[in-house]
Length: 114
Ligand code: 5GP
Ligand code: ZN
Image 1 (spheres, rainbow, N blue to C red):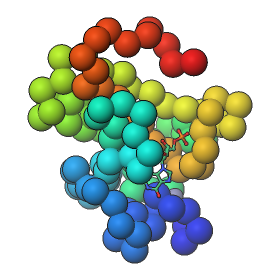
Image 2 (cartoon, rainbow, N blue to C red; image 1 turned 90 degrees about the horizontal axis):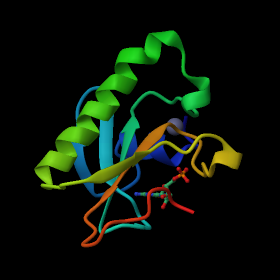
Image 3 (cartoon, rainbow, N blue to C red; image 1 turned 30 degrees about the vertical axis):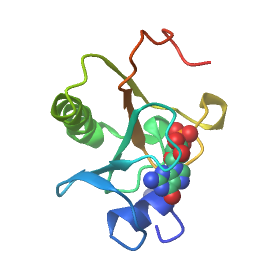
Image 4 (cartoon, rainbow, N blue to C red; image 1 turned 120 degrees about the vertical axis):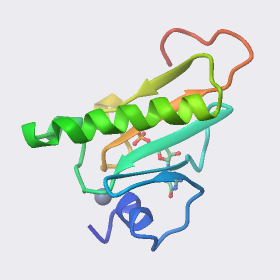
């Protein structure tokens, strides 16, 4: 989708600090980080949100989570949060499926964000 910022990043038409990329997913630094480490792992396929997943996307979402785990290991994060915001009322602003990897705090964070 050409009017979707994450699709534009996925095809290299918009800049991003890319951390990882393969044929199915791309991971890049969040432009407005809310944690010392804040990486977005997104699908290259345009899927609006978790709420729009089809059963055929099962392995793709599994892959998304495993890439997040690998990135956390690469950054040597001892603990981290993985968050999907789903829909406007779930705090989702960009309507393209993405997983937030948050971590790098010195102290124990709150169990859930406000
Ligand atoms: P959401 O609230 O939709 O789950 O999260 C969207 C995230 O995308 C936010 O954390 C926001 O800072 C980030 N973001 C929005 N626009 C851009 C952009 O153009 N580039 C990057 N790298 N991150 C973005
Ligand atoms: Zn998109």
